[in-house]
Length: 604
View 1 (cartoon, rainbow, N blue to C red):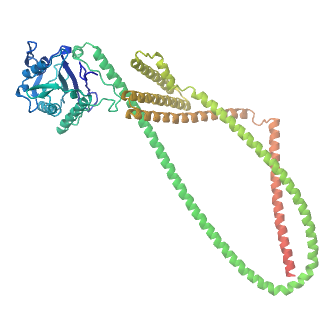
View 2 (view 1 turned 90 degrees about the horizontal axis):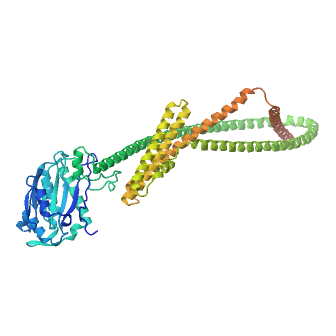
View 3 (view 1 turned 135 degrees about the horizontal axis):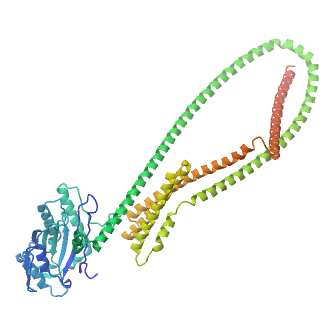
C-alpha cells in the first residue's frame, strides 16, 4: 500500500446498534489535490469561515453555514503565532506542497457523546487532540458541529484537520511518514475510546464505547455499511437508496442472528435444566444408597449381636453338658460292676448282632453303589438338559436382538438429516457470488427446517395415541438439536474465516454449543429407541396372547408329549433326591451303630 490514507480511505466503526453502548466513530482520510480538493476550502467549510486561497486566487466563504458550534486551532507551544491563524496556516500548507497529487492535510471525524454538555464535548476534543496530535508536533484545526436538521438529534460530531509535516522553526519541514503507520492509527482509535469512556464515567454515565470490531469482541454481528450524505438525504425524503437497502439488509441479518442466538440460549437453558434434574436424581440415588448402606450396617450389627448371643448360649450349653458328663461318669463308675455282669451276658447276643450288621452293611454297600451309578446317569441327563436350555435361550436372545435392531433401523429412517437438508440448500451455490449464495442457502435451509418442524407440530397436535405423540415429539426435538448443532459448526467456521484464527473464542464457543446440541440429540435418540422397543415388545406380547386365547385348552400332540417328558424328568429328579436323603439317613444310623459297638467293646 503506497499510503495508508491515500484517496478516500476511511476507518470507522459504529456501535450504536447495541443497547447500553454509546455511539463511537473515528474516521480518518487524507485531503489530496489528486481528488480535486484543497486544504483552504476544507478548513473554511468545517469552521464556517471565510478563507482566501492565495495559490488559486479564490475565496471560500461559508460564513452562512449553520451548525458549527465551536472552532479552534491548537498548536505546539514553540509554533509561530501566525500558525494559529486559519487563513495563514492553510495557505502556508498549500504553498509548501508543490506536486499536483500532493497530500495536504489529514481529516479526522469524531462522534461526540450526546449525553454530555456542549462545554464538556469541546473540552473532550481539545484534550484529545492536544495529547494525541499536538504533542507529536502536529497543528490541529478542529470544529464542533451540531446534528443536521431533520437528522438524528444525537449526531454531535467534530472535524479535526491535521498538518502532515514537521515544524522547523518558522515553517514546515519534511513529511512525517510515521504518522501514516497502521499501528499509529489503531492506537489513536483506542485512545479516543478510552478518552470518551473516561469522560462518561466522570459524569456518572453508565454507557461506554468500544473501538473494536464485532469480530474482535466475539459478537456474531455484521457491521452496517456506511450511508453517504446523498443516500441519507434520499432516505429522509422517503426514497429508497442502494446504500439504505444494504443497511436495512444488514440490520435484518443481524436481527436473524440475534433470534437464532436467543433460540440457542433458550435451548441451552433447557439443557441446563435437564442437567440439573439429572444432578438432583443422582443426588437422590446417592442419598438412597447411603440409607441402604446404613441399613445394611445396622443389620450387620444385629446379626453380629445374634451370633455373639448364640455363641454365649452354646458355651453355656457346653458347660452344662460337661457338668452332666461329670455326673454321668460318677454314676457310671457306681454302676460299672453291675453293668459288667450284664455285658458278659450280652456278649453272645452282640456277636450275633455284629454278624447280622456286617451282612446288612455289605447289602447296603451294594445298594449304595447302584444308587451312585443311577445318580451319575441322572446328572448326565440333567447336564444335557441344561445345555440344551442354554443354547435355546442364547438363540432366542440373538433373535430378539435382531428383531430389535431391524425395528430401530426402520424407525430411525423417518428422521430428517440436517446434513441432507443443507446439501439440498447448497444446490444453487454460485462460485461467482459465494457470500450471497451461501446466505440464500442458509435461508433456504432454515425455511425447510421450519416447514418440517411445523409439519411435525401439526402431526403432534392431531395424534391421539400418547406413545405415538411422544415419538413424534422426540423426533421434532432430535431434528431441532441436529439443526442447531450443524448451524453452530458452520458459525464456528465463519468465525475462523472472519478472524483468521483457528482458536477464535467465538469459534470455540460455537463448537462447544455444537457438542452440547449433539449430546442432547443422542440422549433423545436413546429415549426414542427405548420407546420404540417398548412398543415392539407390546405388539409381540399381543401377538403371542391372541393364539393362546384362541386355542386355550387345545394343545398339540407334540406339546403334550413335551409336557409329559418335562414332568417325567422332574419326577425322576425328585425321586433321586428322595433316595439321596434316605441314603444319608441310613449312613447316620450306621455311624451311630458303629459308635455303640465300639463303646461296648471298650467297656468290656
